[in-house]
Image 1 (spheres, helix red, strand yellow):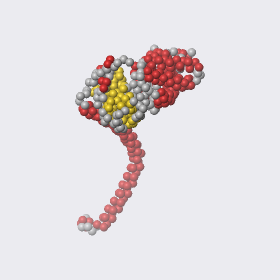
Image 2: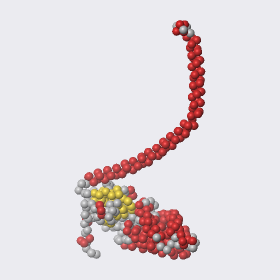
Image 3: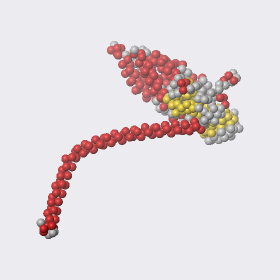
Image 4: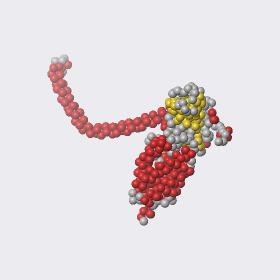
Length: 166
Length: 258
């Protein structure tokens, strides 16, 4: 039952990303709410469904986006893998882990999208893409990561109450 | 009585009357003052209530004004689109609202709220009253994804109105659009209008795309390049028109394999 909470949360995050977050731009970049949400969920110690969330989010984003569906899917799974590694190393400072995964996750996903666009034949400048999109995106994701982490922590407490008692 | 009626007591009666009037005036003014003092708190309460009611009414009216301004904006937009469609009776249009954008900033796509249930098919051109927006890239039952001409993978065959030259319009990740493959001998200038040429079968001809704002011509290049300012403001897209009677032609089987 608690796994089903992923469905409305992921759908809501992707809808918000497409309809609102993508209109709030800094230079040419905007935040990635699904990425931050999946990262924050994966960093919750009691959560064991982060991989499912990554697959569901990647599939949904791939369905909406013009980028090949495998790119966001691979990107979100890689982000969860990174989050799991970071969780083991900086488990005592969850916010530091959250900032780190926001930074690394943004770079990983943007690199994958950039590579897929280059592969599809577009001649785009790496300098423009990094300076005008990835850097502002990193900044916005870092700003967004604090409230999203708080919300996802509360959601994890609500969805996994029994483990909290242990 | 007879003396009084005859006016012999006029002076005395006026004196008495004036005195009585002054006394009555004194009592009356004091009563009114006292009445004001006694009724004043009730009036303040009433005034406060009225003030509160009026403030609420003002707030409601302001909300109505904002709502009406939005409706006026939408009506003006729709009127412009209707004028546009009437000016081109050869095309059949389906209006759609922009409800979302691509989750990745590297791609320039928008989501519209019309899909295959409304007759939208992949490849159909999308315009506004100002000019070309892009074309439908993917369709589901009640929504479609539109690739904007600013997308880095977008290619539009265009012609320059003044120079009568063909060229290729290419988007970028930053949303800038450039003209490439302009012959070196073409005489192009800033301000020249860029229109779709219809070549390749992807778009109908003579749709306005934008204006040239910068030309780069170097002797050692094979072609000239130019930066184009699109006529459509892609950050403010709200309602678009899909040309539903245009069937794109797929010429890929005719392109020789490399």
